[in-house]
Amino acid sequence: MAKNFRELKDKMSPESRARASKKADEMLKEMLLSELRQLTGMTQQELADALQIKQPTLSRMESQGDMQVSTLQRLVHALGGEVEIIVHLPQGDVRLTQFDDAA
Image 1 (tube, rainbow, N blue to C red):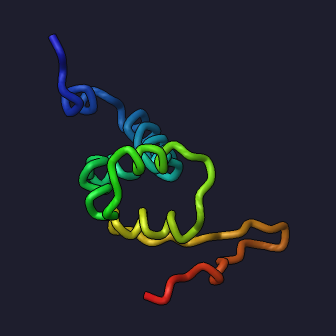
Image 2 (cartoon, rainbow, N blue to C red; image 1 turned 90 degrees about the vertical axis):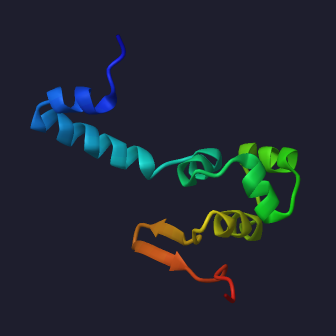
């Protein structure tokens, strides 16, 4: 018989819950574009419609390893987010403002 997550979670020790929560937080900090879209609850078709592109085009975008910053910004904006580029240097982190959009 399948158990729901709440039942399993209730049986976990506080330490186990804390470890699981920390791991989940870490996993949410690193995602593929397709996972980011799924997190927002949008389907490929819904996002493609918002971007005024075809669903197969969005599918290719989600799987490509390189894209223009402006394309990434459009995609993330359609999901309700913002793109921020942080450069990690030995001297410290720097927020790159060159690609900030005018909006």
